[in-house]
Image (cartoon, rainbow, N blue to C red):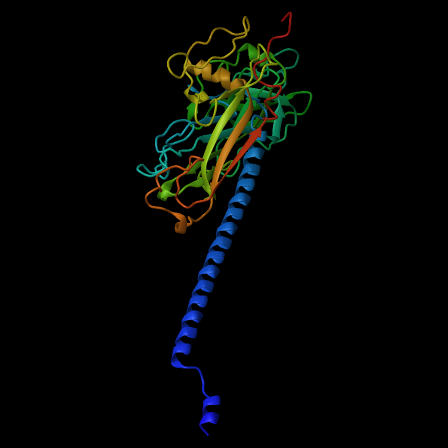
Length: 405
């Protein structure tokens, strides 16, 4: 009888406790491994999202840079008195809370917060302009023959001109750029108010005032209807299109914002772009077969064009084509000539994952930069660099005068 009972006995209490302990350990290990795998999968998914974001932003930037300069190439554009711009312009680490052309003061903008590892990661601000070719009108001699294409406050275009440039929907005028890419010396910004159409062979008369917004152009060739440049052929007018990019750190985290053509408010394109830097390749027109010079020399050294001066620690030089050009007059003249010689644009983007992996963050080293120069804050980053040759800059801009002219 006792033998039968012993053969039907179960586990002892000690055996059960040991088995339970082993089960708990195995289950705990499984949970930890599962959580680690889930965390890694989530982090890898974020990395893929950041990579897709980088490609999408690159495509958007490339398209806009390629369109820049339609109708005026890299000629200077006289927007109003004392306000001259170019089709591609950027400002190094601009604080946009402070108003400066072409942007008004914007208190919703912030640079990277002081006292953080991001304080040195301020971005450049990029501004682009082009003319809308769908609205293009060519200019013709007022009254025919060799007369100028401008007569007082009117510009002349062939009769029965399309009226797509007429203001509609509220604005009292249409912003237009009048340029001559074959000339490459100066483009003018106007406010178009009316088109007086006439049947051919008479020309249509376009009433337009030189200036931008509420500011007029009062001196120089853009204001002077009798200037010699208006007797030349090749002038066109198009609706002004502008777009801009900036990285805004309002709230303590970065967001790439886009001021779309015709928009008045900045829109967030991506919250994964941490930094944007712009460099320019400048040609030497006196020795065009030489390699380009880059401004700044690299992302971490050299002087950007917007900070170039004729003397001091930020001295920059530019080729002077005598006798076509006079000597450089001042800092503004120097920067203008460098911008006219831009032949390639390089934009570098730093894209980071939406969330930080806090499990790898060491509070003692979070403010210490890693070997790539980034804070050790748990964000995973990718660097994207795109180089674009603005297709409207290739043949436009300042060029040597043909022999005998």
